[in-house]
Image (cartoon, rainbow, N blue to C red; front, side, top):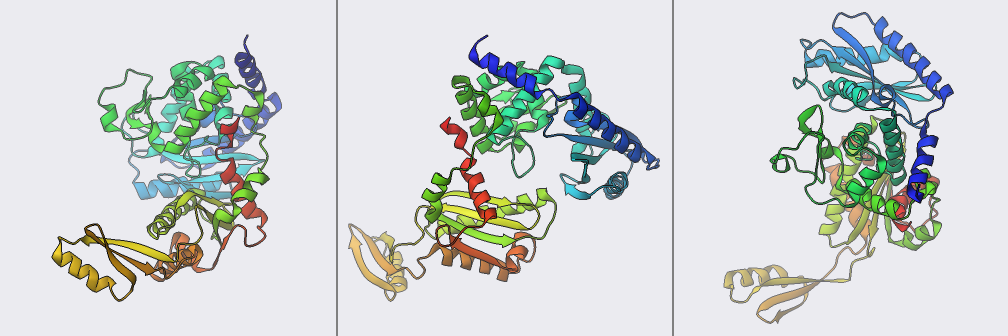
Length: 451
């Protein structure tokens, strides 16, 4: 057995859930299932335990149990959503629970430290989907028949690998590889090592399909990687995976195949204070409080606002090297922009039209003459320089946020920002623990590449 095989075998053995944890989860599963069934409603056809727990691919330190409440297909959508919420609230009435959103709302809660998801879906025939969750019971049935104990072990190791790289999870905060995708990958390639070999040689427009792929799938689907759902050939599982996560998987696969270590799978890296100190003066930080809401909604809003502010700063000639958002999902949030420079030059050059274009040249001179410091010709083109009115990136960011709030943006992140925010460079004040945590997450985002 060579080095990588021995490390994988060690990872397999350490990934097997303990019998006490198995017993604990089985007890929780029976309790919640009993509560769901006690919600006596003829519109509910069946309750199915799904997810990684039902398929035997769960990790001991990261476990959730999914319950799919299968509702008769003749129930209208609004009624379906209300029924799903009512069942979830009823089943978790003894525990802290909250509403989450995917394509439709569902109830999530914690039972003795175990995350419980109670998700409504329609009881439909295959390929007659009425909601996105309708496929999930079919996913469970499919994997239960396909995955033997060896393949389940390989799935668990792949999950540990993806978690170590920071790309495990389909939630918007990560936009990575879901548990179901890891199962599909292992089923396709047969082992953890084979999956890594495949991704280490990944080419553009690569299609992963358990059944022979259809040639036109590349044209049909547009994503960094195409992964066909085994129970629905019209669904691309890769659409929910960000290009950044695919790129990390490719690099991490190459690194692990060359330099396999047990430590890689443990993700025990410490915050790199040296790097933080080197980049703090180049970090624009926008810190604010949030109103608590569904994490999926919150992360989606944060990422969209982050992109919007970044584009506007770029349009103001600031070079955005990297951008990052972070939240504790309870009270605090922060935008971090790594910039090449925090202040613009004191003068700005504007290139005008070529002098052959009489009307355009006359218009340019009329518009620029009074505000220009200098106006001259460069070859056959007219050029001017003007004084930069706002040189600080903090001033520009403040104006961007003020304009957003003043224009009627009173929902989502704009509403949060309206209640106050703080803008500063990373070296201008002592950073609080929340912001330091956010910066450490940003730094750790690609630190595995150094291994």
